[in-house]
Image 1 (cartoon, rainbow, N blue to C red):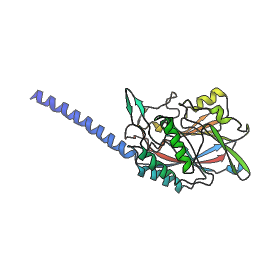
Image 2 (image 1 turned 135 degrees about the vertical axis):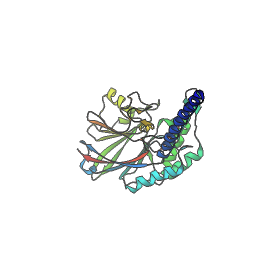
Image 3 (image 1 turned 60 degrees about the horizontal axis):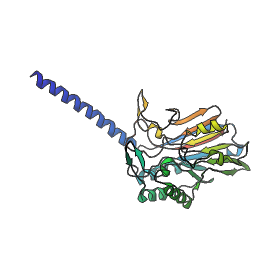
Image 4 (image 1 turned 90 degrees about the vertical axis):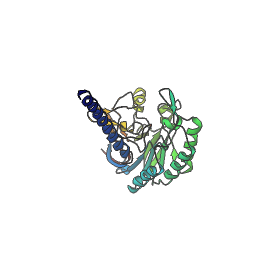
Length: 295
């Protein structure tokens, strides 16, 4: 009798653990579809008068692929457009690419995912335009795929900034929008992007990876505001523990939200899509609207 009771207890404990894990997995899967529209005000001292109150929409880390449906991308576009932003910025990882996970290769570029991603993003419109930079996954299936994504974006009216800048004009004043290739890629060059940018200009940098702050410090350059993604907000965030994994040597510093480094600020979106596992815990996907004001 004692032995049978012991087995029953072990079985109960195993069932309990499996039940808890199933509940967590179920909640995590549902969270991947719980898309939020994040609204945030960001004060910039260098912001020109004409740009005070500028509404900047952002979509990042779409990862169009088996885990991210066309419907979710469509919902993200709809939510962002409902806020009527003045400017729209796309900060990389449009389509999931092949990558090494431990000893094997995961994922890969698929034409069908690329196609619906471009079709949905083609609905984005804003008075000051739609601009983009590429992320690490856009490169991980090869430079040909990265070029295809960049060309596809240009074909739908999105200006892709690859280590270059664009002067935005409003009310007789200007703002400098700077964009770089992904920080992990050999084609990345902040120095090239900043060449000929006016010294006294308000500088907003699009960088998929917020770790670009490291290079800004090393170069001694002035950037007022960085708009990024990449970290997915950790994707799986546990109470009292935090994110289980963050693809950054800075740990949880650039996990999500607004981060200040002296006078420089970085906004990190949690992103629309997800990577590797169809789960988000305490970290719902988002699209963002950042309202800039003079601090």
